[in-house]
Length: 236
Image (cartoon, rainbow, N blue to C red; front, side):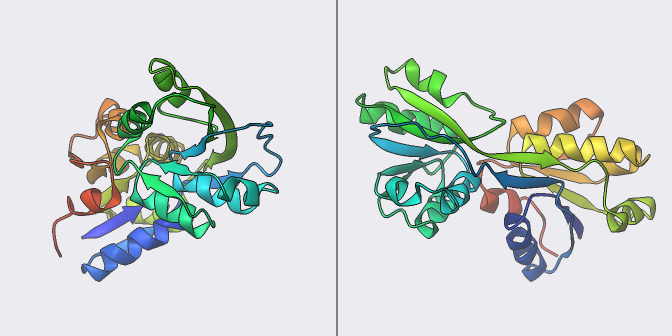
């Protein structure tokens, strides 16, 4: 299949490599750019641990001036990818919920209350983790340490691929990237062609804007992780 991957780097290249190894032709066109907030004010603490719901938050730790302090705290990650990114950033004590934000809430609620947790978050969040945990009397301080910037148009090679009908399937890893995909398609005058391929979505929430736009051929991963999404794509 001729597949399009739109997720930001460095994750996009990793996904593309897996798909190419399975015999697919892959066009990589990131529609989101991730930026660390270099001057993010973490506050004074103390905290009982750090919480992340994205590998991007772990990568933001690397450039933060208080990296060493954060690396000494226990860290709770939403899944295996974010946990691996935290270890790569120098955090030794990492626990993964091995799922989505709801699984992370259950893990932290079972751990119980205490001094606040520090949630290193993105500017746009699908789940308000602090609000979810407040219902379990678990205090959380949320600090934005990264933001994503949407592309305003498709790169020229992708625009040409749609014009020529050369895209069979698109992998969508976040609601924001799906929304950016639709906005770029409209801006380039290729929305009908962009809706026509098979759309492989990480979760029902990711699929929602595509379904609302009329993308009928949708496939949703049974679990919100990269392996489950890639397994939806038929072998070449």
